[in-house]
Length: 148
Image 1 (cartoon, one colour):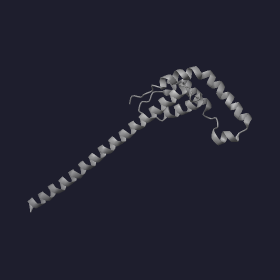
Image 2 (image 1 turned 60 degrees about the vertical axis):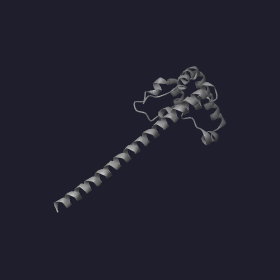
Image 3 (image 1 turned 135 degrees about the vertical axis):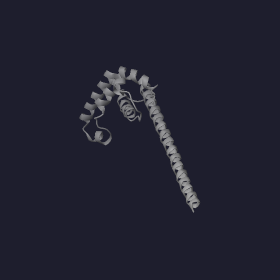
Image 4 (image 1 turned 90 degrees about the vertical axis):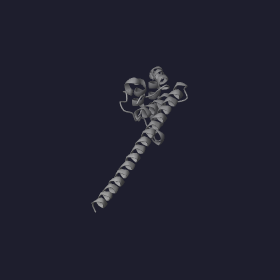
């Protein structure tokens, strides 16, 4: 009788050990997938940053639109110990902060032509003032990368 209980106990322990092992394996696979997905996302964001920076550098994209896009991409990078990007690219962030509140799309169309003109003049003056600094910063962003 004791042998039977011993065999049953060993069988139950073996089954539980197998189940625990399979759960650990699934957890390892899930963690690896999550890491791969995060790496792919980072690579895609970096590629987008470099592409937009190149477009600004080649004057295929205006400074305001490019800076808005760059700041949003830089801020959404899912990395630990992210450097203070606003200190590394102060002109890009300055233009972004100055124009981020300006209306776009339907809101822009709905406002008066005078207000639109006034905002465009403000934006163009700021772009002219910061252009050389932004272009210097953008040239480094064409080679942007992060070490995670």
